[in-house]
Image (cartoon, rainbow, N blue to C red):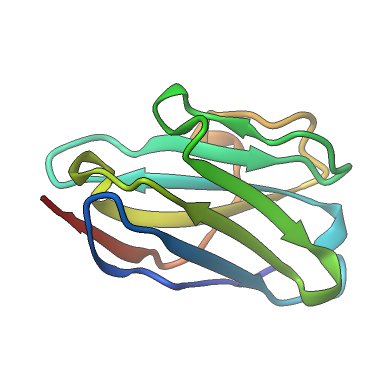
Length: 125
């Protein structure tokens, strides 16, 4: 069992930046593939980014490539999502997800077992 807590959301103007953090409980964080997803009102939850438990290059949704950077710090049990050049369409609740030793960096939300409570990101135009 792992518990995930997101932080770092808020209100920012278009073109601005935010850094989201997701801190996990437990001693086996390094064994978890981690993902970021988001959901806007009236829309389905969508994939943002994922990073494998083995490290390597994160996977990104096309619309955030070049603007968002996902990273992990296993010593701190934390993953980050650095979001730059934010757009109003990035407005959503952002969720952190985890699954132990999940292969690759999948974008399907149903593959992730553990979820955080979400943090709101609002980008004003």
